[in-house]
Image (cartoon, rainbow, N blue to C red; front, side):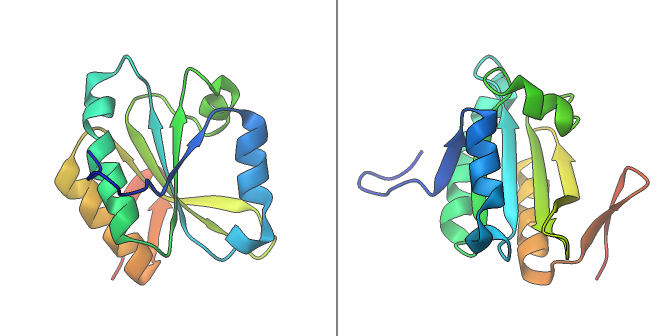
Length: 136
């Protein structure tokens, strides 16, 4: 939960159009994006919401997006989201296309915090052969 008077830095993506608008803005191309794929009916996903809000306040150099998979079904399919919550860490490549650099599936607060911090600090997390690997 956010403290009273603290504005959320998490952008709610409620349509494919909003996703396209955000991810196509040149000003975001150099910023890492962290996406929380969630669903209102999923208790583990809703339990991770305060943690995601907290991470957005801590890591101000990143863009934090929240996507309800029931509202934006096409994006769920495009990003191959099969379980909630799923957290994607993305960066823009040379061609200005977004690439998933890391993925955390499930409600694991310690792992989520660790991976977000490493992704933002080092930018060297890579997904190789569908296995998440931290490289330092």
